[in-house]
Image (cartoon, rainbow, N blue to C red):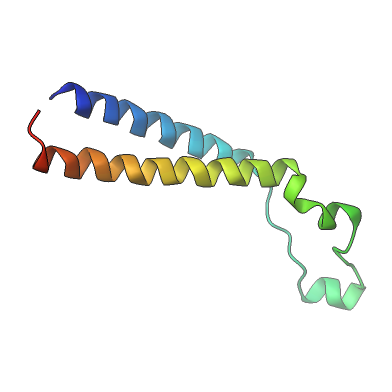
Length: 86
């Protein structure tokens, strides 16, 4: 193993652990369904209108960023050593 594979493996491990923690910290998605249509419940509130600035939105954004980093790092760790000999 060379240093690139070790650093890549550590980066993959850190991103997986952080993404798992962030996913578990997020609340469940409670969309409007047939029950809310019957009961008259509505998500048209101040909280619903400002959903992009909430804690859940921030956690979701960081989760997506970490998963993209994980995907790119996985590709680099597996493809780069084939073409570049360290």
